[in-house]
Image (cartoon, rainbow, N blue to C red; front, side, top):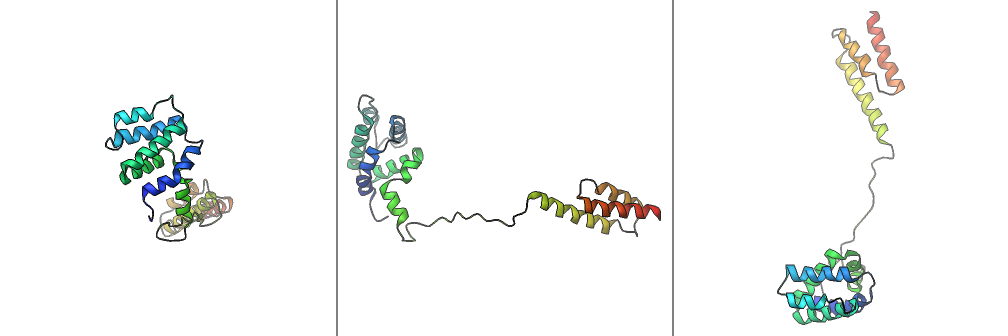
Length: 180
């Protein structure tokens, strides 16, 4: 990335303070993430200060952002990671994320092709019908007239559950072998 996380956080801070999707609960989740996972970034005392419910959420968030910018690059990066983890829709709508996504540089953003690949337009029943015909043909070949006539009974049983045309062919073949 061309910008450091501190510069990005400076650009995104106004958006984050104004965004209504960041309610008290979500800000608390981000604060707890930073406190529990990275206590060197946000100590227990600092986390308690930023979780004070008497202070409006936008003010607490602004103070947290200022505090993280003073802590350095690592703290800002971890804030973005926590934001991405807990409030993904806000993370992807940040001005710096939108700018990154819209840039044409292929090294910073790889476009995602969400085209649906369809092999055919037919339903699964079409596949089952074709598979049934293939099984029927294999059974016809396997139980040909050179084999014992007991194979014709298996063909009669195999005809159950197939389409009407395939069923008629298999039953006709079964009846023909009984007549011999």
